[in-house]
Amino acid sequence: MFVLFARAFASPVGALPDPAGTDHLERVEELRFTFVVERDGVVAAERAWSWRPDEGLATRRGPGEPVTFRAFHPSSDAEREVDAQFVNDGFWLLPHLHLRWAGDAVTVEDRGEQPVPVGQGSARMLVATWPSEGGGYTPGDRYDLFVRAGAIVAWSFHRGGAEEPTLSTTFEAPVHLGPLTIATDHRDASGKLRIRFTDLGVVLAPGVSTIALLDGEVARAPLVEVWEGGCRIRGIDVPLGGLPAPEPPMAAEGPFDVRLEVRRGDRRDVVGVSGELGLQDPGVVAASGFQRCELRAADDALLERLLDGASAEERTALLALALQTWGPRSGPAVGRVQRAAATCATDGACEEVRGYLHR
Image 1 (tube, rainbow, N blue to C red):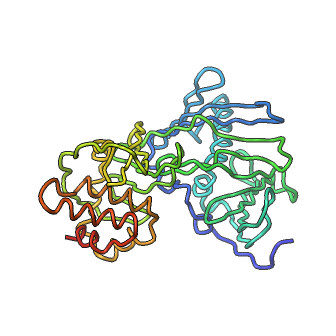
Image 2: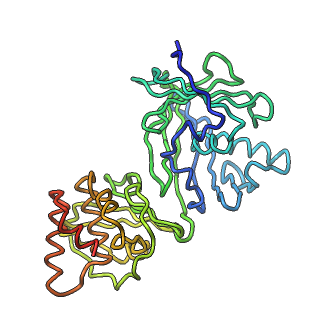
Image 3: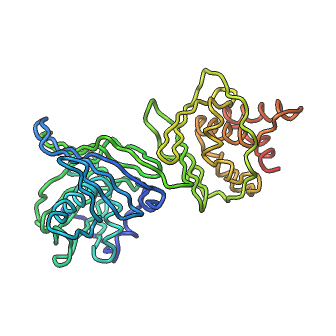
């Protein structure tokens, strides 16, 4: 039974936050993925895709011979069939993006906190309904999205707007690819149906890079994002205009307490951070363009926000990046700044190092 309170939005943009990062799709040059459907543990369908958003081109790399076409604008019946597959698979991949594209054509209704259809607990329920005319390949469809902290954790699909769900699945195993976050595993309540994504890959647009903490081999959400128009650290916008990077310092020796994933273009590098805030490969960080993020000219309030509330791992990573990019190379200040940074990283006592960064 639905709660009495329900809000209708003319556009889903105001209703659904976007932790998936699809607001920043212009930072992606190419996205690769394979869509896999399993029934009773047996692969029933598998399609491999490459998508270049800026060019508007998609390629179905398999099955069969590769087919390249203008995504969402097929020019023949054969392309229309492949495009319908791409739209379906891409909707599972990045539903936030398709909701934004739909714009005013889709009505989104907020029905408040509701039990999730698969799994345990409850989540905010947003009902997205496509128009019965002009609604794409499946007009009149309805999706019940169950959202926690802005992320979809489950959904129910109602074909043609049917009252009873046609299909309900989870959204699990999120993976961070540059600025994008993708749920890679979807299961129904019976356990017989599983939809998953494999072979995920991203090529970032020129001038774009991301730096993320690693848990094992799995990247967290980006700690740092740099692109031609800006810089973001811990989700906070930082002005551009840093000084040209000096020659990278010598590489540090292990052990490395923290590991970072650095992405730029089609490269993915892993860089260790030592307890003394040294970097395993400073050249990779220099190539990322992190030095363009202007911390020293920033106001005190911004520095407070960048460091305060950060975990020890986040402070270690950020201070190592800052020191290796701008830190003194010689003289009596080296040891003093290094000690202040180490104290901030381990104990959260960051007043002295804040003073250094602000000078």
